[in-house]
Length: 242
Image 1 (tube, one colour):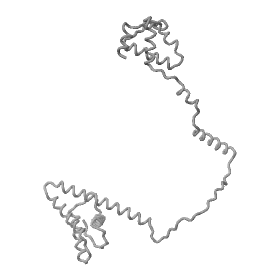
Image 2 (tube, helix red, strand yellow; image 1 turned 135 degrees about the vertical axis):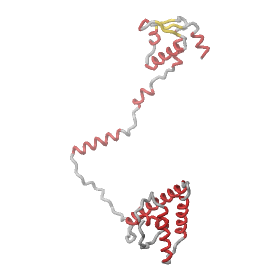
Image 3 (cartoon, helix red, strand yellow; image 1 turned 90 degrees about the horizontal axis):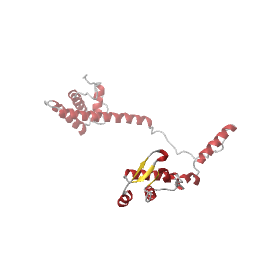
Image 4 (tube, rainbow, N blue to C red; image 1 turned 90 degrees about the vertical axis):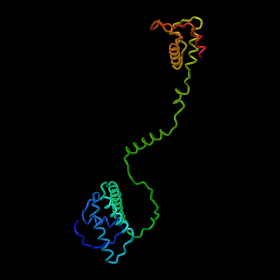
């Protein structure tokens, strides 16, 4: 490190002095050499004392901290020294960023100016722009379209939801078993003859699937010749389980 020629600025603290030394010697703040930095730091402190400058305790505390880090580096294992140096580097980087922000803020603020409250001005709300008739037509159509989105839907919009009859699968299971109670067998298509709505047809179909799954009925044949037959004990088993 080059010999310092001292032009003593006013340092705000030990971190400010360390940053000054690092910048003076063009060092990498993340790879500082504690021993060299300590020599520079103590020499600066001695000069401050020789000039009868007030050296606060925090400067001396930082000097002791640097001496301790240098001492730990002399040990065979210096993991603690690495940790202490990383901590010091983090503080220097943080302090350097704070100084940069403070300089930017100092440039933005000027305490020699006077700012008064904004005066109340009466606004002129007269519309003075001219438009083509086609532009007015498009604006009107857009406004009408946006207004329709806020109109509540009519009752007819809910007719398919509210007015449809809800048919349970359990009720259609009872219906199928009653149809098979006496005959024990019937055409498969006959089960759907009385269904007037989709909900009846779907519920009846699901009821047949449940009965087949439970081995209470079976379907024989295919297409229009298919028949549904009641398995022996199907009604009795269904009653006992239900």
